[in-house]
Image (cartoon, rainbow, N blue to C red; front, side, top):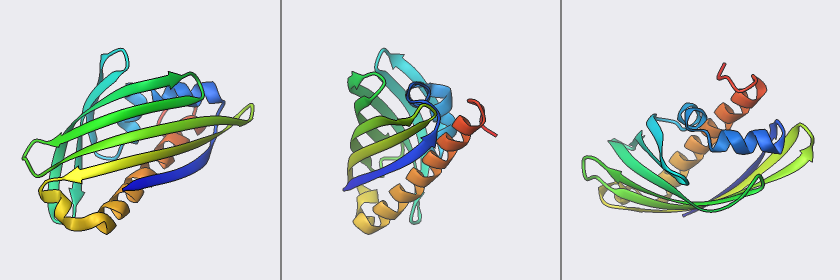
Amino acid sequence: MIIESSITLDGPVKEVWEKLLDPACLKNCIPGCESISVRSNGEFEGTVKVKIGPIKARFDVVLTIVEKQPPVRLVSKALGRDRFQTGRFTQENQLILEELHPNRTRLTYTSEITISGKIATFGERVFRAKAKEMEENFLASLSDILKHGGRKP
């Protein structure tokens, strides 16, 4: 499943870039994120709780930055495994930041997601809807943080 979108954010490119790599900001933006930390330079780990259909899952996630061109391009891969063995996912992401104005940045991204296990039985339509919901919540939270000087309102 491929998810593609873009959004215009209030904030300079450098600030948006920094927020996208800040564990505290990410924890506040990722829906259901219970924890996130830097494992090593270019690698994050965390736990995300989600509900897909009637199934609740808690994923241990490792995200690795594969390519970085600060402050305009980031490529990463993520692997998530549910603690209760209901499934797993892999995700490949590409983010592009473009300065539209000194205080306006366009964030464009593509994510390719593969899901397996029990949760995969719900089909792509259900996952696409859940991914869209999580995307909208993430972007709204990131936008709010940028508008309020780095703090979540």
